Image (cartoon, rainbow, N blue to C red; front, side, top):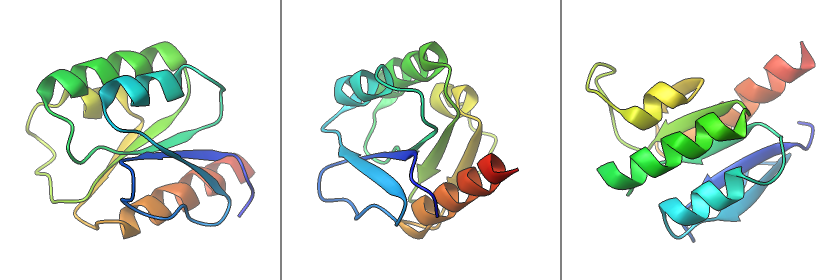
Length: 113
């Protein structure tokens, strides 16, 4: 894997997959601040964000202009309204931390063309 994927996750939630840079974010404001810096693609572990936090992060995703893949540790039906999921390029759900590694690999394959 090549470096250049930002992984945003709650502190202690996981270790960054090889080739990714982990930024531990305590909540929606820290996630939004991290998205405001840089341009690399990002993977966001969204577990624990409430509805207001999802709104905040969704606005930050749109403002950043970078591709972001949301990872949900638990299963999602794919139909329930989510402002964050709508703002992201894709959603991986139900695979726990393995979903983060899958998202990083997906972004790297896409970047390699």
